[in-house]
Length: 397
Ligand SMILES: Cc1cc2nc3c(=O)[nH]c(=O)nc-3n(C[C@H](O)[C@H](O)[C@H](O)COP(=O)(O)OP(=O)(O)OC[C@H]3O[C@@H](n4cnc5c(N)ncnc54)[C@H](O)[C@@H]3O)c2cc1C
Picture 1 (tube, protein in one colour):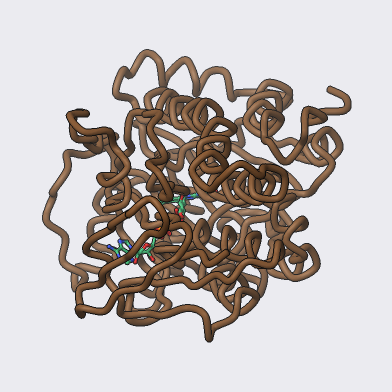
Picture 2 (cartoon, protein in one colour; picture 1 turned 180 degrees about the vertical axis):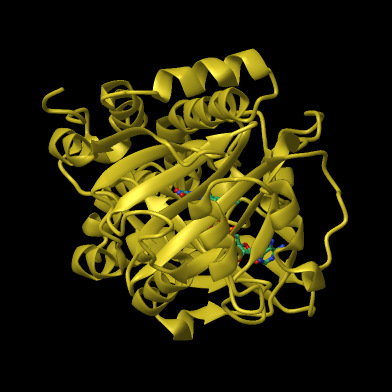
């Protein structure tokens, strides 16, 4: 079969590799003119890594991954360690180590494995037409392509999502989470946090965190609860961060000093979409953020896109009625699970950003002296329901 995928992010490229492995003829179109991922890095929890293993990329992704052995929480203002524990139980229980990876590295790996010849950049999808036998994509430059099916992996502002919604369904709106995330990469420094730990400084509903990625770098991010559409000029560099984190602990000031805003500083408002269950229409289906746009609070957006790629591959490997039926079965595997992760992330965003200060204070209190068992249970709980686990998600607690 010929397959058109719109979107060359983690979702589109991983789905493309999965379908190529089944022998399909896959072509990817993306509106971007060059491969420049938004955001510096992401955590690939074991459910995401397992899909990459299945795609034959296990050794490569392990080489890109940082050694995130432990988790540390610190008081943002005093720097006092609230808790410090090993993440090894997550690996033992789920059967796979999790890795933070630089986005550009992951993106390059996926695009190269798919095959750069099959990825066409500078192609903005503007229209989809399904005549029952084939589906045709039209692009802003006036060109078209026709295939047996089309997968919309076109991200949070998906045009394909609009297409697949049933006639008369309300327009799907994104919801502002109430905070902004600022992220980038800096060289590892023990003055900020241990080289093998995910260290998070917390206070006042804000967070400053670092995670190790390959190449002796820390992925850093800051969360600042604030209204949407606050003006920000790139020329301001770290000034708004210095203002928001004035008086915070020495480790946070060291992190601010380490940032080079000209090379690695991204600012992104965090939005999500309330889960919805129409993911397919005829020969067209959505995947990744197009289908389940989430806040990053449990680090599962890209992992969930990878789960989609797995489910899509299994659906096409095992079903034989017709394309529309297979796409519906793919969606049936995914809608509930992906929606649950979106809602878990939304709840966690609420808990951690002091939108209700008493709730966040209770969370801070729970961190003090914690042995990590509850946190590990939560992370494993996000992972165990993955379709990649085929029901065998957790072997021991
Ligand atoms: C701050 C932050 C931190 C995060 N951290 C994590 C984490 O730790 N772990 C995790 O698993 N996830 C994380 N995520 C979520 C993760 O980034 C996303 O879920 C993931 O990148 C979605 O991939 P995607 O391929 O679905 O969409 P995208 O990466 O958005 O790709 C969509 C592509 O479609 C293209 N496109 C859009 N419209 C059109 C069109 N009309 N025509 C052609 N092309 C089009 C775009 O150019 C884009 O390249 C985080 C997100 C944020 C914002």
